[in-house]
View (cartoon, rainbow, N blue to C red):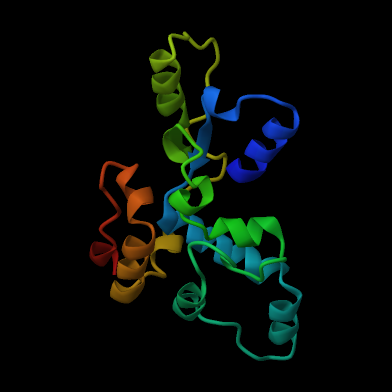
Length: 172
């Protein structure tokens, strides 16, 4: 459920949405966009049909340039939610409705920090990763143009990572 949908659901229940602490989990956009491309390649019926016919699917850079950090995202406006919202920037997705962002790659520490700010001592241990091993080859897809595109579209997301982003030029 997006924050906008959550706000509507709260309003319907006469609950003061803005009085709650609203936490969202974000993933580094370099990794997220590579994983989104892979998931589309595995599940999109047209891409699968193209591969069976021996025709190429869009290259990563071509596909990335066709996505939007809002609106249609990486699909059609009425396409699967994971495909549409997966390409959205954190700012577009949250639209001012989120009070704290938690980095998926550092969820344990980030959640503990948010809870401490709220005066809560958590009695749980969150995983520090999303459960999938880091796939270094995801990063090899990026060239100077796609790195700049990610930085331009997802600059605010990258700021959540303290302004750091992988220096992918060293990899290439």
